[in-house]
Length: 150
View 1 (cartoon, rainbow, N blue to C red):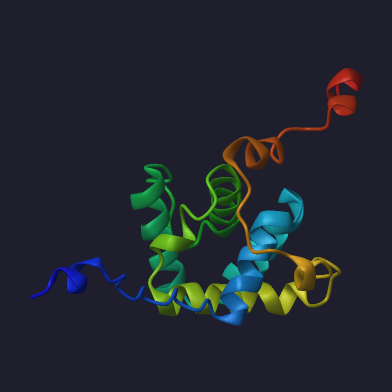
View 2: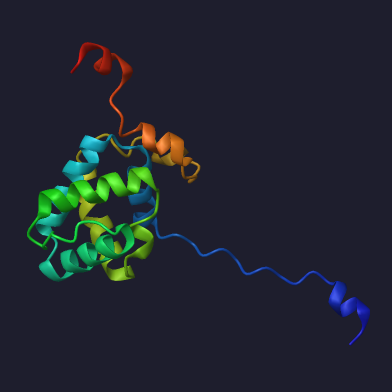
């Protein structure tokens, strides 16, 4: 082999294309208020079959090292766990889901979100995940609530 062979830039693998509904779900995870995400996750978990909920629960328990006492019927607590985890560390839960569970969860959440204005900024979103400090602030009450003792 010649030296030129090694000096040539190897073609890069194209980045995988994110499916539209998964990208919309990721947008919601990054931009929607925590209370709205809780409600969306709760509604989605209510319509998902127990087998899919079990996959989500098992993934949450493995990836987050918490929620060991939860069952597939603890829908309210699982919804909150999902919201807090994804806000604190973007992608921590959904990146561990098998494709079928991720897709079904995303579709169920988006069915509910379509009835709100939560997707209004999606068309201009750059797809970037926030840094961890920005994400964590979404879980904190606004300073005016802290001063009032609310």
